[in-house]
Length: 385
Image 1 (cartoon, helix red, strand yellow):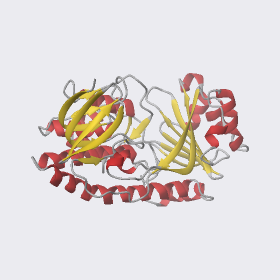
Image 2 (image 1 turned 120 degrees about the vertical axis):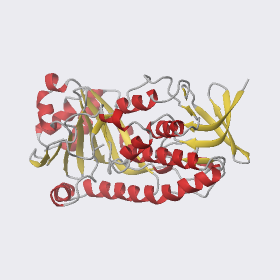
Image 3 (image 1 turned 180 degrees about the horizontal axis):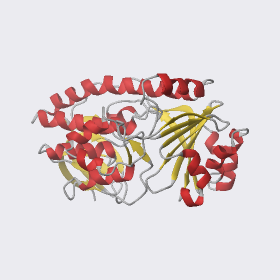
Image 4 (image 1 turned 90 degrees about the vertical axis):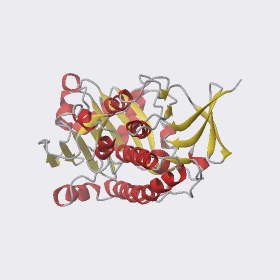
């Protein structure tokens, strides 16, 4: 039997964007409910390090009244950066002197900060959406796999790239960008993988060349988290048995023949390896206003990670949406119209930057262009997330 409850504001998705929206609504006196498919906050690890930018992510944290608490979880030294070529030559090296505007934090710690700032019971765990439908007059029903359902007067889709809410607004679906990733971890790097720890350094690391690359971070727990990026057909991942780590690492290493052995060890010595395909919505994705529903974060504008803005943009989306709702009491449509008016140009600009960065980094002159960027261009636009 379906059990239906009503929530005036329902947020589908408990990632950084959805939680930021809930928190900013809360500090402005607006109650909301978050529905998250994971069973608990500990259901899975939340990914690696994030650099939180002064221009967007930190603005969201100020709106959430959490900026001081955020500063307490910043990873010292995390803004250091190294750029290498395939032969191991260090082309660019920047130290973290503590004056940068992109401090690094652990994604899981940031999510925990947001979760801990919400009233008990705000997040409803283990709610996998199976269907969403309009009821008329701006109201919607959301059905879940446990047989329950809710209705709401404001439905916010914060449920990521493969959003179940997006079809209410748009027929667009993310498409493959041509880049596949092998995500690897080297645990206890300083003691178990000291050579790799020395290669990566204290913060963010890139090795680029031959239209491919290795991007890595030193994590706050002492591990190294890396992404090996390849230009590959969409089906390439399916040709590799990633359930067999030895075979998977060998398949990835085959694309790095001739690269420096110190760089190859970031793959060869990995303790875990997971495939990822990079997808993106069309640059400039937008929709006509539909009463009672909107999107934020990847649900609205999933893009490649190569502008380093995904989490920052999602958090700013959440904050700006919440502030719009709070400043238009009783007028949901005016709030959503104001929010989307600024959302669309902001996300289009960032998506274009991301697509351009992908083409630059994995182009024929990727290394040379990124060296020029860091040595003569405006610092801070390349991916560090």
